[in-house]
Length: 635
Ligand SMILES: *[C@@H]1O[C@H](CO)[C@@H](O)[C@H](O)[C@H]1NC(C)=O
Ligand SMILES: *[C@@H]1O[C@H](CO)[C@@H](O)[C@H](O)[C@H]1NC(C)=O
Ligand SMILES: *[C@@H]1O[C@H](CO)[C@@H](O)[C@H](O)[C@H]1NC(C)=O
Ligand SMILES: *[C@@H]1O[C@H](CO)[C@@H](O)[C@H](O)[C@H]1NC(C)=O
Ligand SMILES: *[C@@H]1O[C@H](CO)[C@@H](O)[C@H](O)[C@H]1NC(C)=O
Image (cartoon, rainbow, N blue to C red):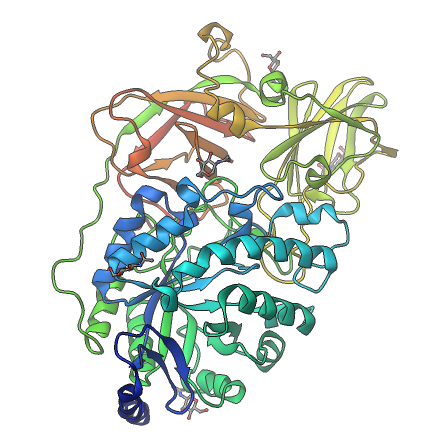
């Protein structure tokens, strides 16, 4: 510790001497290699930053979260740009509403926060496919994150659009972006392709200019630093509370002998996969290690400061020994909760920051109010098999063998594969995916009767019965594409043939399902009531839709939706896709519902796609606090 403090003092004294040389009023941001620090307008500068992902927070809450970060004493934020969020269809760009990156940068600038921008093109972030658009997979053997020509062409087109938008927001051009990261932890990827990194370097320099500070971030091993760093890009490291900080920064020093110490991702918490214990990182440990790094004069970004939510289908997945999708909540046990509320961890961090810089005076904005709206009764709309006219208006594609989501050009959500039984099955007969080709879960019905499910890596065989000619419906769920490691070419749907006993199933009708399109178009409430089947007439097993309304009570406060007697599925409120629920697998038990999407005057429409089986009581519960762990409710 003592040595660290001395270093801090030395760095600052040396840097201050330099500031005299600067023409006053000139905006600049650079690296001072002589004195091992950043220089902002010619003066030594140390950033204390926090990560926030605009793609995980509705636009109406951006300002609230940024103000709370500013009031904690941060002078910067770190932001990922997810490519697939902005270019969902190749060549068609969306930068409006919740995707309005420039508005987000503007709000940060108004708040007084500098920006460390991480535009990828790959970002990891536990985000669907690490931010890469799934349409890249239309080339079957594309080598992502390499100098593959088709990949590079798509990257070049995207960066031409994105970086041109970014340029006016650079600090040196009058905006607030001080540094820009190139790629993301590239050293942990198997390809280790320097031609790719050099191509990115050329593009970033072309669009952002020679004066911009560009950097890389890598995990704290020699291999990662060797493959992830490049001459001309400042090398930084990332590590959490369990790492020896002296050793971590000396590794950075081996690759960057001079210049500022930077931890680009100091982990305040961690993510959850379905089936995990809810991850928690101790607040005292976070604040102690933060203090040690700041005392060394290091620049620190806390990952995450505000995690937010994987709404819709945006969660990613890991694939180490098996496929492990990330839960809907990205609370991350971060200093600001998923709902943007200050936690004890935030207060502990603020106390540390106070020792290093003046923090803004005035109170921390309070938590947004929460409301327990209580139970809402739902009724069944119908099973998936009976709703295909509504959900698949274009009808099926016929194919002898199954096609993937990517071949069908439907990249997210759910798709239905239909065929008929080739012969009578009076005895339970195994339905097998011999090549582990279920990506990721398949819900199997015969003549509309649910018979069970298959799951990638874990359940590759089930028994079915039926008669020759019976309809077999297989609803396949994309649980989110792999976002890290060598398996990011994560095709979805039925990737290989299914075998029934000794027969290969063939002659498929494949229905793309535009569930979100139907729901944003007003379905199911736009349907006349008489189409709703009477209650309790049908068994509530297998994939089916349910709907109900939350009556307005004049409040539009944040709330948390609990579906604990339900099995697994997806929820929409007023047309907005709130994400997946899966309480049996856990740990997440409630979904975050931002208040501003509720109406104070007209009934709020709740629509549930339950995939396995609804409870006897068709009801859901709105609570006033989250439950992210199956065992201990978070206070
Ligand atoms: C663009 O994104 C916004 C915000 O998510 C959305 O409301 C809008 O419908 C999208 N525009 C198009 C053309 O898809
Ligand atoms: C950022 O904020 C500063 C200070 O309020 C202002 O002078 C500057 O014009 C803003 N930059 C942009 C690009 O809006
Ligand atoms: C960290 O590593 C250094 C150098 O290897 C060692 O001297 C020091 O004791 C370690 N610190 C802790 C807290 O383990
Ligand atoms: C699915 O819905 C159709 C139409 O309402 C009905 O005939 C069929 O029995 C249902 N299947 C199941 C398993 O509920
Ligand atoms: C399928 O049925 C057979 C015969 O009834 C039984 O032995 C086997 O365990 C069943 N397999 C599964 C996966 O349920």
